[in-house]
Length: 279
Image (cartoon, rainbow, N blue to C red):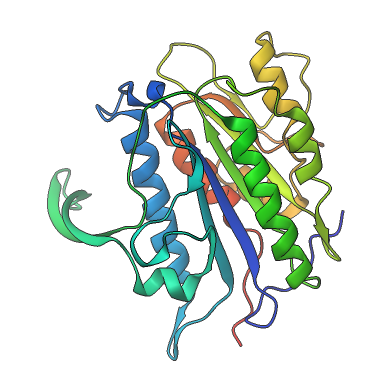
């Protein structure tokens, strides 16, 4: 385990989001939004944050290549539309100039005096929420593996890709464990690809957050996702600890029965592999 390569324009890293869009993603969460809507909002906010972090005085610097795969009724397909449709992975410079649209939204903020203020904000949208059909997880991870092999071959000196997989149910096209293992064997000279899995739920139950063992997991599906998840590199574990999560040696990038706050944190933690080089 190295995961120490500096991220720069010459050697960017890749972040690939694999998003469950099956029919059960239309269930409503505590926020009042469906799982599909909430995950889409978090993903769009995450992309916007990445674009912002890459924006310097000379424009957007290509520290990241970003990809999205959605899977549901249409099988496993590239998740970005418009000018970005038809290809899975794109330089962040392309995403910066090609959102599907920019919406006007309202955000509540603390007014500093015990009240709240409504603030109008611009909200770029790259990824649309969809929820229908089954859960072809194996097909989605296979498509991810194909894209990652190509990317790693083209970027041998880069920090290895990070895959954030979001699901709310079991695979309907076979056991994905072997494909997950294969993904974690794809590598650059700096280490193997990191696969982080999060299960989103509307059910009441304990949330499992970054465990280092499957011993406390009673659900067979939770055990499967745990086994599919990479051990967090030390600097990523530190980011999680800074957000208040209890981290034990060998903690994995895995959550089960995640609530809205944990979903947001999971995306933030998983998309901060290292500080970028300002050059």
